[in-house]
Length: 471
Image (cartoon, rainbow, N blue to C red; front, side):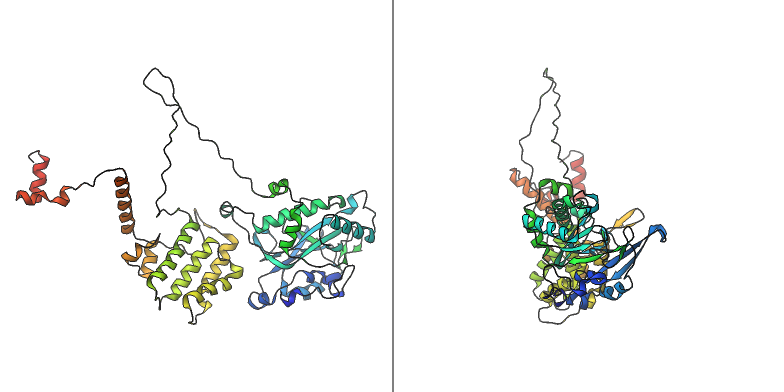
């Protein structure tokens, strides 16, 4: 675990209130960066701080702040009125489309709306929250008073990377996405504390929580940290909440699957006196050819980087063209989703080291691809007029054949990076195979047998006489 995560030192015991997490610096307990992030992507993670009030245009003012600058920035918000901070981290602004890291699960307890807890004391609230946690085998959360209600925060030991998935890509996934898992867990944990005034619909990753140390204008009271407790991993929290998760919780979050309509068989009209007859064919659906490639951007990209790996295997020695292989393999892996912007350098280095082996190479040659991948992860599809395209490279087969000088013999061993001539050859071979399976004999035409030679006449004379019925 990185040293930046080791905030919960000996002072972080139950019922403790360490100074560094008190008041305005409380967000430093979860909005942190690892040593790797600080070294490689110091400006990647950001949070938003919002001020609400009639004096601001549209009723609020929002600022995006780099996590590495958060400690200094927080000082300027000490004693601010109606000030809020995002509980998760973003690439910019505050929207699910720009989400990059999940930081915690939380409950916003509007205790003032409940009969039992509207006049509760801090000690009574903490005691009852812990009783519920023990009853449901939940770890104790960090507890904060918002100046009116309370926040429960189950802070993760390490941030969880999460990017928005487009509708097109989501339809291809069988398992829930990271964000969907988080929303299901958020719904379940709020359901457990519903009696305290929690909201089971608080599932927005861009949700704001009142900034500790600031003033709540409704009561004039200051938000403060009451108790800090141990952090736990996201996977651990999912495991704990699994026992409390119902099918309804999942159905409420996961996209609804479209029900497939049963095929309707239309009656066939016959010439006989029988008015109608339902005919059901028992012929099995023909299996697709082994060379069949679905016309889908992701599956095509997968087949292409597999072809390039096959080409390396065929050639053995690719000195002088290794950087081209690294570039295009990383490009196609990025399209399939196997590479992402946040971990691009590590993932690209694995590909490059495997191809270059013991030779040195530089990631600088992939900087353009890295920028395009960032745009792809954030937007996926770009619209220009009536056309849509993705920011990554999608070349034609002819272009790849030219770049890598792929020979006809090499194409015969590839799946999809093939020329039009190779496509026709495979089509003829496929049709010939079908004819042989049906027991049909291969026919030889005049073009193959050249009967005009045996007759001692020209080819043109032969076809003229054949057309007139003289042969």
